[in-house]
Amino acid sequence: MVVAVTMGSVAALAEDAAKPADTATGITSTGDKALDELLAKEKEGRKACKIDICSALRSKTAAGPDISCHVVQTLPKAALNKMLAKSTISWPWDTVHCQSDIALKRAVLVSAMTQPKYEAVFNPTTVTCEIERGAGADKYVFKVSLAPKVTFENGKATVAQLQWGDVEAPLLAKGVLWPITGIDNKTGMLSGQFSAMVNDFADKKCDEVKDQLKTN
Image (cartoon, rainbow, N blue to C red; front, side):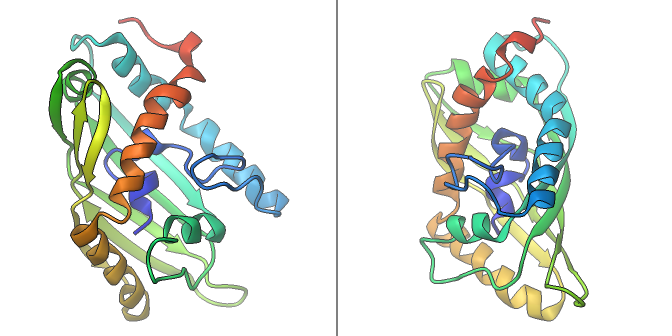
């Protein structure tokens, strides 16, 4: 599902895909003050992880610790529909709240930035999400696994495969989620967006914390 573009095992690389005024979604505001505040709070909560990843990407030295983060990401309905715009599927529910523990090998990130061509294989990750369904309705909870591979050429992501695994969800939710992951596995519908967001993260998003990067 759309979690791929935000979290996945490299979800930190697209760490604020659904924030207000984000260029990836074109959303300037959700129109909901409480939701906008939540998105801002979550972005701040991901900042330490962002600094660790950007430090590895920018230092281009394999010496140093690997990266482990707990990532929390809320996705408004408008962001979900934006990401699904190229498919025949629209998002039938409301906001989605996701979280995942991610582990990134420093050597993989550095190789992606320094080698002329490199296929980065990231650790499999399980993402757990809650889907809001409107007032009075119980939330749907689902889990989905993915094991991304991203090909880099001269430090830029060119091809991505999110490689979705099984979806654990209530029957009605699975009926929507499974086709989305299946379509992406076959066509790269979301994976193409993911490549662009990886590049945006390595450039613009890392520039946002360039004065806080760790040198060792």
